[in-house]
Image (cartoon, rainbow, N blue to C red):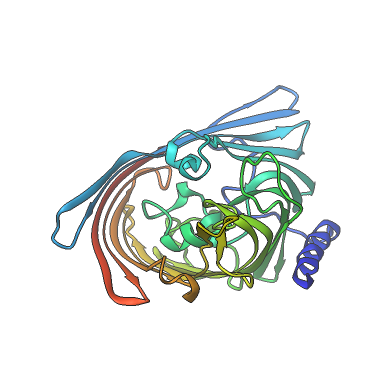
Length: 400
């Protein structure tokens, strides 16, 4: 409980500390009120503004076994999004809505319902630099989740993110940042239901999340700390260090806010740490995530005839890239998921090595991506039980 009080205190401090705050820099989580991108509308007296943006990702991925026999093909629209944001009456009251229309984007296989609503947030800006949010949105967890899928340099987020991210939830959110000379820091927090998006009713267990970011070399150009690859060609080195902690009391899903429904509620704790470094087209980023529980990873039905396990363990994802002035980029990723010893017989160690080339036509808004990769799955309980796969991916993204 002491962690719950600590995280709650951070949100209260955020709400009270109004005098020295600077605006949040998350590209995907901030309502656009200047109507500089997408299609914008506002009424003559300036009391209402609406910005409309859309994007799609079309993907063809080919999965081969060790003998290069084709196992399966993923040919689909991986993401199709429609986004609305703007302000009402004044720019102190803003809103942000994001809808998804592709099946994989709706968590259909876990929930068996079309989760069209991804984000639905209302923000109140107490002054130019500080605001609070209420609604459904991304929790301030690991960096790669906070970075919009439209700002990714690979065709998708890593297996580390898919297994251990906090993802989205409904609740209260608070953000502030402060400059100290040429450096800066950001503090972000949330109190949420802990059940994930689009729930009808939840239990009395809450989720508490806090994140701290340090920018010792100053702010990135155009919020580049939340955009993968150095497409702004930073003329001075820029570095952001992030870390955070989350407690999810009485979680009812195998990954906390995502995954299948478990038989018994569990208390989960998550730790995450990450950094991103950019300089003259070079970009290096890495993140570590750990999830655990003190109550046992396996949950059982009433007569103990069936079990569903929590996804607990840790993972590391590292990415390195160089973008040429022509906006051709080469990128590499290594990621590994290490399951907790308790579930090592049912969940393998999962490693990916990806190499790829991107062509940015309109930076991240319009790009063509090509990747090849190698995946190794190993059950640590039996080191001889191995599975190897080769991967080829082609993806096109188009957005406004």
